[in-house]
Image (cartoon, rainbow, N blue to C red; front, side):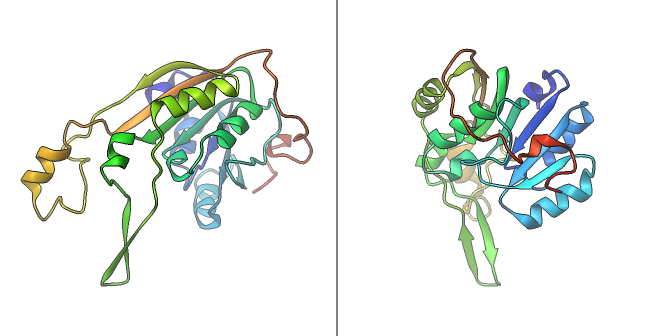
Length: 216
């Protein structure tokens, strides 16, 4: 949130926007928001929440957004669901204007390696989970540099007692607290698109940046 609040008002892509949690924050700060997500159900909630924004169904690896059309990209806790960072970072760089900022949060690789997985109930007796992929800081730096994104800052806030929610939290709370509290929880990255680097061509027709009505 602190990095988002530093952005000057402009056009911002909320990549993997979900129900519009960060979109609402951005809109309140004076930004025109373009939200992209794969879930029609989540996008419907986001549209009701922010009718003035532009929301489109799309994939992080092939964004329905014009080249060089946004001042910033925000992507919260989504890249961890991709096995490879390269295609998404290339797309973020493509849609950013020169000097544009990219703010990304990801589940910290320490937690992924320890088996941290988001769980949810399936019926009354079963539980499911969403697969997380381990992206090391070196993976981020390498992929970002390859696609003309310069690192500006990296933050690694720790797990608190309230956020150390695992399958063991209710069963063995003391052991869970000792094992997880204080470990780095997420990586929060800020990158900037550098000028003069090669970029992919040909994604400019019929994209979301053409106007606020498109994609609603």
